[in-house]
Image (cartoon, rainbow, N blue to C red):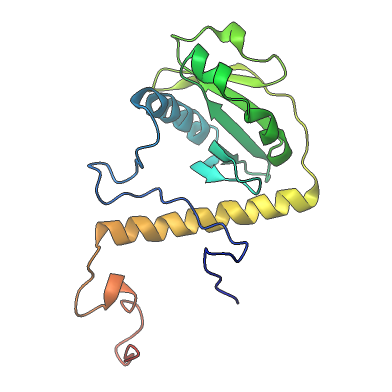
Length: 194
């Protein structure tokens, strides 16, 4: 196994999602309150549909998807959140998301006219407490190699964020467990390296 650094090696380090300086460590400060409200409703919809999801995932193209969803059969969906007409008009990166998903949706709130969103994309309306699927997205299956790469990326980002959340919950560890609790389950006879 090779652990490559994030500098000059072709490895894109995962975007930090956990911020120990914010009152809510799962918010990194890039999203507006309205975008977070839309995201929360979409998350509840997807969880109810038994779909796993990750917010703010950097794709192989370098673009950041608002939500990447992984279904029970391995299907990958991207949800792009738009909170205003202007937000939709100025953002032209979303067509690139089709290369990295089987389905592409826009998600918005009731204050944005639904007619602005393209007919060839799915549409989700969120009020923060829940969301409703207004239009199903057409399927455009990804090539197998892209699917495998994105599924592995999904797993690695999820695992990295879980570790970040654990470290944020206990940033200093304790003398008994070593830094960040790394030696907690190592057994009584384990001695950390000097």
